[in-house]
Image 1 (cartoon, rainbow, N blue to C red):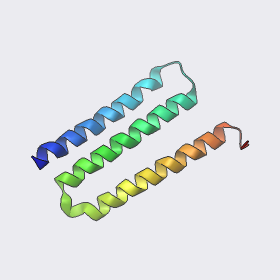
Image 2: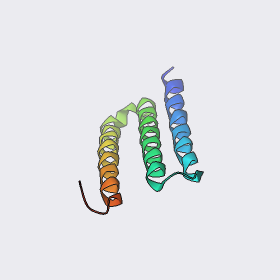
Image 3: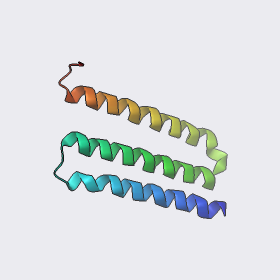
Image 4: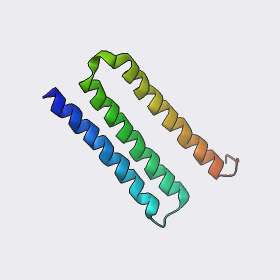
Length: 91
C-alpha cells in the first residue's frame, strides 16, 4: 500500500510539472507564465519528494531538508522576480 501511494505521489508530481509547463505556450504576460510555472513546479517537486519519502524512509533527514529548502527557495525567488519586474522600485 505504501509503495502504491509513493508511486502515486511521484506520478502526481510529474503531472504538476507538465501542467506548469503548458501555460508557457500561451499568449499571456511573462509574469503570469512564471507564476504558474513556479507554483506547479513547487507542488510537483514537493509531491515527488513526499513520494520518495514513502519509498525510502531511511533517508528522511535529507528529504525533509529538501522539502524545507524547496519551499523557502521558491518563495524567495518569487519575491525576487516580482521585485525585479517592477524595475527595482517598491511602491
